[in-house]
Length: 266
Image (cartoon, rainbow, N blue to C red; front, side, top):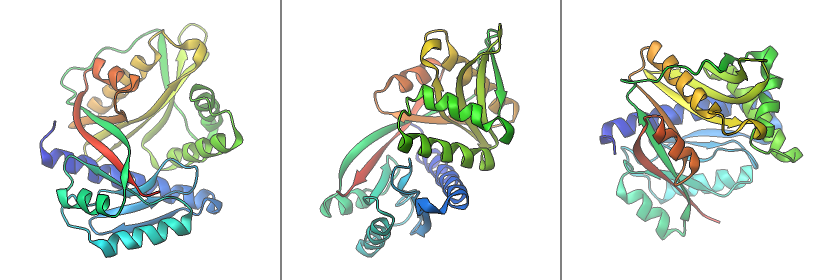
């Protein structure tokens, strides 16, 4: 596990990144009802029903929320139409989890955060070309993501598309696709955000017919090299605890930084 100050720094940057993405979603499509507001030392990022971020982030890292703060989160979550949820981690003050459990919150899933010190980054795979997507290429990224993540319903596809449209506006360098070097066909996609000396490797997916040929390894390697060339102190990512994605990241030289737990009230 990383030192507490490193975990706090990572979580603070991730909280700000989530706020920026949610603000972009709100500007793109107000029908989601996206709401973002300060909450003690963190932020409540409520993107809307069916979207990927609907919880309080960075809460309790330095301060001690009270019942009134959680009351506010619950009322605002109800207005958006999502269950109240607070993300805690290994650096969160112990009193917050105790407060939430007393109020009936339950563990609704864990995420493993990982970190790479960028001291050793593998060479790029010449068989896989990685290129960034701008506004003109957004549809290609959206189509690749939809197939790779099996977004086979209108609801899931709509959520995926709006997040991509938001990310292309606020993430830097942003969205990227992987293509086969021999014929240029699409293989997969990923995201990268660099800021405040840290690179965040966001979600990535591979088209089903292209799995098993090292596409994800190539996407990870490309982003790590970008982070190193940009002068980042480290690169970070996260995935569901115990998942193949975590194992894949660890194989590429990442180390476990900390564990994040979603405490939700249903």
